[in-house]
Length: 411
Ligand code: LLP
Image (tube, rainbow, N blue to C red; front, side):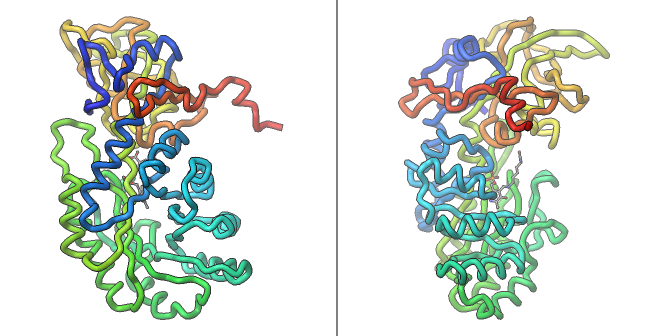
């Protein structure tokens, strides 16, 4: 969705004070462009909404792990939610204090856990009993204490896409309530681990607050039965309006749900998409236009290898020309060059007449865009450009890959 940073001025699309068309010409396409000002503003808005609860915010780096993005948020005071040692490594490289990194993930390896303990990461969100044993062993060997939260699978179904719902009983995530209860009852078996929190994340792009309320109730009920559970990490999931007409709960509404239920607990939050999503666009150039099967098919140089969400989830991203025109609008299918029928960036997109060389911007591509990019079809991953928080300075935060990069790891 267009916003204060990504908007039309005199019929041209801008990211802050920088015209997107000029960036496409200068750096080539496909190209990711992020507004660091918007990233910071989104973080501040969420931090302010949850400030009455004293909540600590950890940005979910899985949504956008670019160092420039992480550095911006770390400077703003955010911690980082890392879902692999690789993400935690990125967070450290971005200057995040180890204590402000939460380490989550359903399948952390022993080596990752060892590395994370050695580097003093602040929280371990544990999803397996064996993982607790590993942590206890590593802590005793290294003479450290570890702070852990058990990830509860609260068995609630979130109102979201099935691929990104994580809190229902059949999901692989977390531990069911009976197991959490049992593990807490025998906490003394893990003397080197301080289990002082419960973690939950019921899904991404949450459509209402009800499921969150239910999940938090379950967590609070368990926490209250065991001494010393002082922290509730309620995960991420604050939704982003990809469609301007969608009715989605605001951060304040989620805050109200937590305020009523989780009073007295230290709260942690792990928003990703709501901070990074609308701060990024994917720029792509029209290569060819053809009319086939009753459709206008626009073949662009951007594809599912840059932005997988439409192909994987049927996600809808607004697509707009970087130079708005008054011409008549008709539906177009925007597709990429990849050899897959699912390589469609947008179906039935209302667009004016388009010709080869025209630039299009896929909006809301700042979350789960570049992080999910691949080299399929031996396509190089695109560059990432950031507009600094001053609104005007343009910086290449990551260069475009080259064909030689594609061969780099082959020995
Ligand atoms: N915390 C945990 C434990 C998570 O699993 C996730 C997302 C988050 C926080 C951040 O959620 P957010 O605030 O961004 O909704 N690739 C999918 C989204 C997968 C989300 C996975 N977990 C997509 O493009 O929609």
